[in-house]
Image (cartoon, rainbow, N blue to C red; front, top):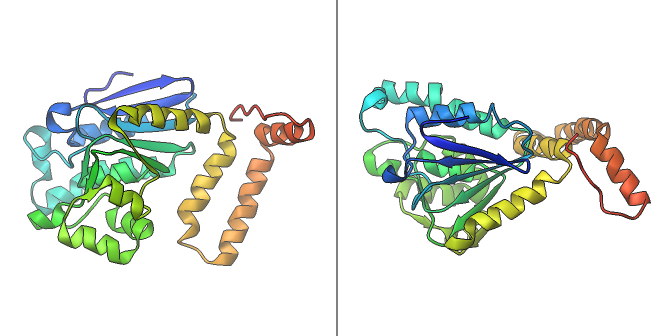
Length: 260
């Protein structure tokens, strides 16, 4: 499909969504948020998703300039923009049943920070940074940042990011455990695609259940986690990939998973 604000490419069962407003460092307008949301409904046979940005930036935050985005202005406008556009997009990303990767090629600020950190694996360029800039303009973090950052880096560091509004360079984000890997800029997409192809060749049903259980793990008690794992094992255990996994083990060969 063709989109105005993003590019969607699906190759070898890997979908790539590229934020495509490089002249604005891929600032995320309402239309871009809707494009990302719609693109996730058209992933076809993809078994992994990569999100990246065109040009020098990953995403510089919400696009507040002109046009339809004038409805963002003011508190009530911001509330509508979040609940009608940004939040549904981020929730859909959160609930996908395939592995997700972000290739953060430059600044990831505001809601762009949330988009960049939301996937299962975050690979960042050495030139990338993450920024919760809201305090600098008298606003509060959104895009799930308060939920996400406390889980990724702990309350103290999340407080530092949110209340001080300073850049978190990629290397420090790795040190804090917020991201998976830091690579040279010219190696970023190759690293992301190599990982995506590995995940796309994995047991997709099981990986989808893992995503769900990991997301819910911090919200439940131990007994509930045990039950959810048992329920997930029932789903994964009935998949064709689980049968293939068992046969490959017995036959002492590498499993060939089909995502079924």
